[in-house]
Structures are given as structure tokens and as C-alpha cells.
Length: 216
Image (tube, rainbow, N blue to C red; front, side):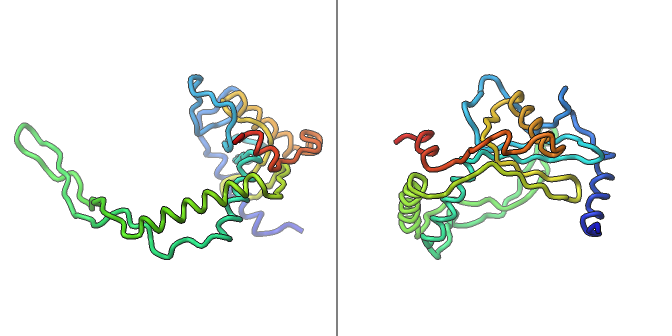
């Protein structure tokens, strides 16, 4: 029996896809990022891509297991360490100001108005500095000693505008070519042409992987 709530979302997504206009590359993918050859990275942690598949748009959000592992460790530390109760007040006051634009040679008119934040002393700066130092120490310990294990995963959900796909894969998406490969893998998984077990047999990201990528 079909879920009426999901079916309603699916119909909305199909209607949205009919009016979806984006500048797609030759592989039919849309990227929100510009990849510069001079800024090529060796590895990265997250990326995203969109494409049409069937009657819907598919939005893929990829993350590397190293990012998921880091997030798990950060969440662990945040549950162990209590942050100061005082807010981080980086500004002492706000001043209402008018901003002008010239009109002709000698006249000017108000372009817009708003508040300008004035930097000031934070009375709790020392307390927050101590907190961040302690958090960094605990996080480094967790990253190098935790028992967290991250496996490749895929999560698909029906959204109002598209099918959303969260991918956690041990690939390096650092340029348009590798981003196209990531999109190709996503399509193959959605079409059930392959599985994560076939693509990444026996893969697991652990503290040993983190230590290799971040030598002390």
C-alpha cells in the first residue's frame, strides 16, 4: 500500500522537475561548485551534485567516511565537556547608521540604513579560551583513540523537490571528473545496477585510517 504522504511529495517533485532549468555539463550533472585546476586537492570531505533520473531530480550529498568519523568524535567530546554558560559576546554595542550614495557632484542620498556592530572586550574571553583548548585536547584524543567504525552507506529519502541521497563513500571528489564519477556511482546504486558491498568490499574507516591521514 502506497504512503499518501510520500506520494504527495513525489508528485510535487515531478512537477518541480518539469520546470527545473540548470546549466548541465556533458554528463548531465549540475554542480554548485567551480573546480579550478590550480586549486586541485589531494582529498576532500564533502561535495554535492544534482541530475535528472526518470521523472525526478536527484540531489546527492556526498561525504567521505573521514568526515563522518570526525563528526562522531566531535559529538562524543561535546557530550563529555560542558561549555561555558556565558555567551561569546564579540561586540560591545551596535550603532544605528545611515549609508549614503553620491548623486551628481555634490549631493547624496540614503542608500540604506542599519546597525553597525562595534568590536569590544569580551569579559568571558579567558573562560572560552580555556574551554576551546580543553576541547581540542579531548578531540585529538578521541580522533586517535576512539572505537568508532564508519562503513560506506546510502540513505534515500523523498523530498518535496527531489529525491535526496546521502552518500558516505571512500572516494576522493576533488574536481569535476571525480564529481562525475561520484554521480555515476549514485545513479548505479539507485538503479540497483550495483551495491555498496560490490563496490567497497570489507571497507571500514577507523582510527588507524585517521592516524595515517593525520600523522603526528
